[in-house]
Amino acid sequence: MSSQDETRVRELQTALRSKMAENKAIADSFKVEEGTVIVSSEQKTAFDKNMSDIREIKGLIEGLEQLKEVSTWGDSESAASVAQAHAAGAAADINQLTSREIKTIGQLFVDSTEFKALNGGRNGANMPAPWQVNASLTSYNVKDVYTALPTGTPGSFGTIQRDAIVTPPTRTKRVRDLFPVRSTTAAVIEYFRQLGFTSAGGGTNNAAAVAERNDGNTVFVAKPNSTFSFVGEQAPVRTLAHWEAAHRNVLADEPQLRSIIDNELMYGLRLLEDNQILNGSGSGENLRGVLQTAGIQTYSWSSGSAVPVPDTKADALRRAATLSFLAYYEPSGIVMHPNDWEDIELAKDKNGQYLVAVSVAMGGEPRVWRMPIIDTPAIAEGTALVGAFGTGAQLYDREQATIRISEQHSDFFVRNAIVILAEQRLALAVKRPEAFVKVTFNSAPVAANP
Image (cartoon, rainbow, N blue to C red; front, side, top):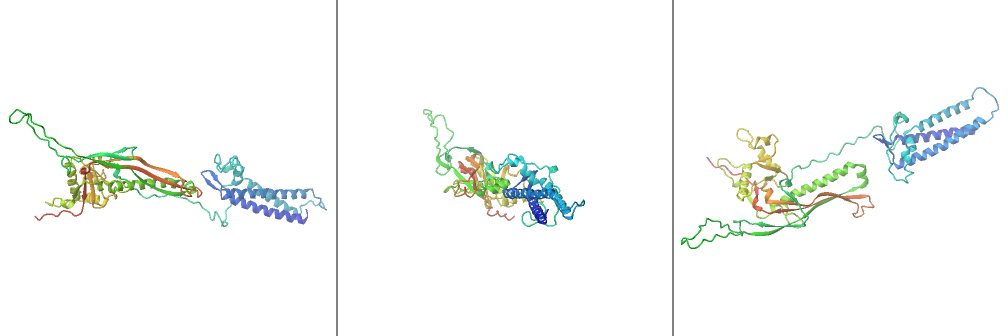
C-alpha cells in the first residue's frame, strides 16, 4: 500500500471514530422510562444519518485493507513493517469500535421490530408496543465516564426527579349539604307559596269552638270560614360556568395537569354555588339566594337577654331557632362564618370549661343546639343563617356539574389548543321564607347592674 493509501486509511479511521462517537452520544441521550426507550424524531434522523456514513466509511476502509493484502511488496521481510503494525492496530481499533457500536442501545433500538413497524413514519408516530431494553445485549450499563460533557443536551450528569404538583387546599363543607336536592328537566320551576293564616296580606284562621244549635235550639249554627292565601312564584334555572385554555401537547406531556385543571374548575363551581345559594341577588342570571329572599325572619344579637349575664353568640343562635319553631318549622341547620364559629367553640365559663358540647371540642361533628354547623366563608362574618333547610327551601339540579372539552373555539384548532369547560345548571326555590332566620352579630347585650 502506498503512503497515499495509508494516509487515506488514517483519515477514514479518524472520520469513523468521529461518527462513532457522535452516535454513541446520541444513543446515550435516549430517555429510558421503566424499561422503555423514548426517542425523538430529531434523534432518530441524526442517528440514521450517522449510521449510513459509518457503513460507507467502513466499506472504504475494508476495500483499502483488501487492496493491501493482494499487493506485492518488493521484499519478503518476515517481520511486519512499522506501517503494517500501525495498520493492523488501526484495523483492531476499527473492529473494536464496530463491535461496540453494534451493541449500543441506539443501534439495537433502530434494528428492533418495534421500530421498523413504524415504516419510516408512514405508519404513524406510535409504536404498536414499547421496546424493552435488554441490558445483557447492550453496552448501556458500561458507558465511559467523562469529567465533562459537551454542550447541548444533556449538559450534565444526573437525572431529574419531578415531584407531583401540590394543589391548594379546598373547602370541604358546602351549603348544598343542608338541602334536599331534586332533579328536573324544566327551565323554570313554578310553585305556589302559602302565606299562612296570620301573615301580612294573607288569610285568617277563624277556627273556633262551635255549638250545634243557637240559643233557640231551632237553627243549626254555621261553622266559621277560614281563608288561605297563596302567591305564585318562579325559580328559573340558572347556569354556572367557567373555562380554561390549555395546549394539547402540554396535557399529553403532563397528564396530571389535566386532572388538576378538571378538579380546580369543578371546585370553582362549588364555591360559586355556595355564594349563589346564600347571597344571589336574583337579578340577571343570578339565583335568588336565601338571604336575599323577602319574608325571611331576622334576629339581632343585641336583642338578647342581659340578665344575669350577656347573651353569647350561641345564645343568639338558639333564640333565632325559636323564631323558626314559632313559624312551625323545625330548624335543621346553621350556616355561619368560620370566625363566628370559632368564637362559639372557644367560649368558656369562669372555670375554664368549654360551653359547647365536649364532643365538638374533641373533634366530633360540629353541632350547636342539636343543629349541624356549616362554617364557610361564603357567608359574611357577623352573619348567620338558621333555618329549616329540608322543608323551607328546595334545590333543583337541571344539569349536574360536568366537564366538556373542545378545540372549536376561535383559532384554537390551528394552534393545537383546547378549551376545558365546567358547567352546571340549577334552581333554588325558597318556598317558606319564614322558616329561615338571619342572625346579625352586631354587638353583644350588656349585662344589667346587680
